[in-house]
Length: 321
Image: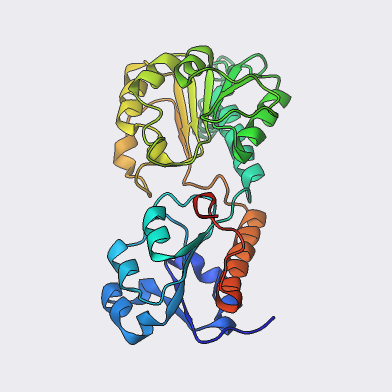
């Protein structure tokens, strides 16, 4: 492949060091986290030479820094989510934005199923009981809830939502879904609105992207309608759920259980969850498998190389395609 003409690459956070060796031969690489004054760097001659910024979208890129990168041509997101990037701004400036749609969807769905099973079957509590010595001939903890026959609602039937639905069905659950767009190819009934799905479901799995329309989509009303026997699973983005309302409902018993891999602010403050019952919390790791990391890195590298050698991205985000 043709090597790049001079053009720099800016890596946003340390997580991205894994792609450095692969992209370094196509242009000089700068680690943003090592810059004492990132904005001053962006305004320097070295900053003006940056052509590609690579990020994972969380934490968000500083807008003032992006504005200062005069030669910026593309933002490459390692992952599917790009909610922290202003696509209107990118369009106005002629900045390409690439992500990795669909990669890791099966792994995320596996995690969603695992969180659902762990919650309903009380696997985490059982582990703690054994380790604490609380398991006796007279007591082995409260009974779990069978997955078979559960009414499982999927919020958003994209690649992840479909993968979750297939797994839920394989576990003998009854599946229905809601989304803003019809999916005539779907094998499961679509509910008329989200509230109707929450009324029907005993498990609600959130699989939507985060944007202006989906922020706090799962609000106090939806949580209340899911009810005291309900389980909320979120493997999408933390902002899709009103966390304050969620914690209040768990404490009061208005909602039965929650399993969360994503949070409004990440890492989440553990103090927020102190004393919140019936929860399983994981560190935004649903898609974090050795296999998916390799695939996501390879896709990001391919996009960086395409920008520097061909002036294009291979997988533009849907809004800018």
